[in-house]
Image 1 (tube, one colour):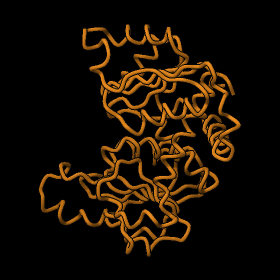
Image 2 (tube, helix red, strand yellow):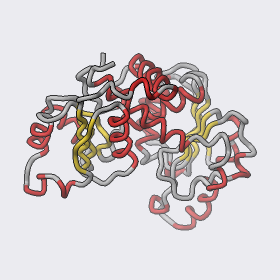
Image 3 (cartoon, helix red, strand yellow):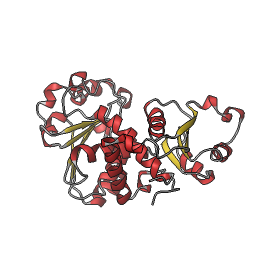
Length: 307
């Protein structure tokens, strides 16, 4: 049972929790009207101490589609922290008014601190470079809906694998399921951190390989998870210029892929996926956005105990 629990780290959700949430999200996708009043009378607080568009609106839309209501702020300047109020006091106050809190804060560990003072479940909507569990849940709902399950896939992660928290979280989660294989596609400068290799990939016993060119491995993939390669991460511009086009997914690279491969992206994208790919039936990233709302609907309804 998830009722009353905090969700700070993706590992706060057991495999059974993930399976149940994905099944519930699938049901909501098929018949959203059946769930339009389940959170009637419940209130979600969205406390966003740094700007966000997709995540904040997704949470608010999720609660409203469940028949609940929302309150909160989209910028720290709109909160009493500008007057010197501590996060603990903010959480003590807000949790007296609402049934669940979704919070984003640029400080790593802020969500865990908030959970210690809250009277209601806290959902971490991003705490600096640490965790973003509902993005991981969004990714899992997308895979569940489009690929039918979480095992037996060859998953390629492409782009910034060193600093991308969404990559790290999804790798950790998928490594908990059997018979997956991972292909890590990045320049040397942006390879996954050593702790992911040693503590996650090797410990899981699942096979993985590295590659520097997307076109060399795209034909092997069932799922391609794209991220942005950032120029500022390179030590010299020549290396960036040499490699940057290898990480732009376009029509020519898609010709090399399986007919049933899906392309995912946590968004926002810049130029790493050409707009010409948007009309390809394998492009799943805008479906992913929609599935994210249903993922949050499922999670909220479980945490407040209405389903």
